[in-house]
Length: 418
Image (cartoon, rainbow, N blue to C red; front, side, top):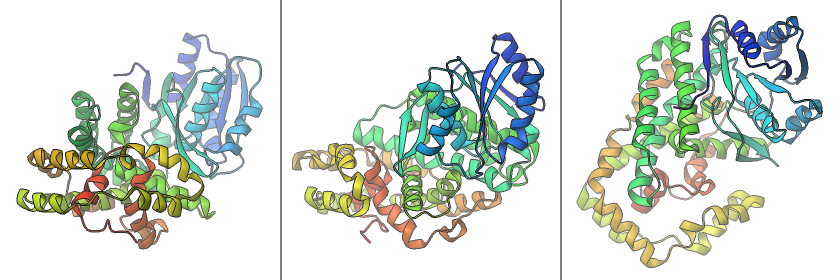
């Protein structure tokens, strides 16, 4: 497991000060927003200044922060020629902004979460929005995490439910990773997959506590979120913790940005999208081997020109980038496609085992609802048609094999073009 000190308890700020003193850190740049600065950032600033340390601030007046060029540049403007330790006082967006700026200025950063809303606190990559396009950029993990439990437990239930939704999505991510191992020869780590599974199971067991926002439930959720981030860090990318549910979430986020609509919490979208992906796995479980063989025999390789036209139609200005991303699929020969179909049939029993490990969509919906999360598109201010389009087209965003890629070949319902 990654060697990043983690403190999760009631004296996080005092522990942060002790850590900084022990590591001779005395120059800081604190990043927060209009919500997180009064909640915790002001306390952190005061505790550091009480030691006579130098603290610069990059506090956004906005409360709805997007990890885009505008906010990244605001932090860069506060950087000077002094080597500083950055402090990310907030959750997902603030952490990613701090992660990328600290990395590019060759400084370390410390994560001080204010809500258990995402699993990216200890990730090495930053999820950014560049020119309104969702992109993942390698940066750096924090050198330490100091999570104040009373602050986390006092977070809005919607943010707690978002963290739960992010973890619930691992049920899809793990299954997709297995499909990729079996059918697309992607690298796979049983040890890391087992750790992600343990984090998922721990959260499911604590669903009602998390839904009530109890300190113990929030502690369990936060540990799962942190360990999920460690798994991504140890593996080197997001594959262990992100599957088709995340690509659907990214698709919807980009759509909201393009249309200047209010943002929806990442984990809230992931949780809801997981239900649709789980329905595809439920359909997969109902296909026996003879039926699979017949469907594979009838399957026709997607037409390259038609696929490229679809990408242009749906994604517009980023189509050329997606042609490169999807090249392994777009450039398959007829022989390659026949080999893939044969591989699917050869591994059918193993595929069925993978599918059996994904909970029924009704079960996931019940869990998400008990944790306070939305289970229908309308709960998140989205339409059924928008989410359906994400289900159909989000697979173009990543060069990874998922239930969507398999479902298109097998003709699963809900994957026909809108």
